[in-house]
Image (cartoon, rainbow, N blue to C red):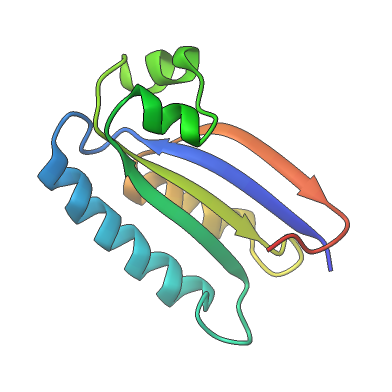
Length: 116
């Protein structure tokens, strides 16, 4: 089964830890509910966390340039790695997620084999 991944930084909640925490909960619920990420019929999986400093950015391989571009260098922010089956997740579903949570694309990856 093919797989694809999109890595994001949310433009919502930047610089506000409490707002990032609320956003993390909302993203978690949305991805689990929309893409069946906790069932055997899952169409997507994800890993999200609040990045609070440069060290944590480096842990997730987010470059200084990417932090500057997407958050103007401000911490904390929400980071999301969204991995999905491109044969079962439609572009409009991804766009809806991006718009709802202010997701700014950092990078993408794709494979002919499942990596989630």
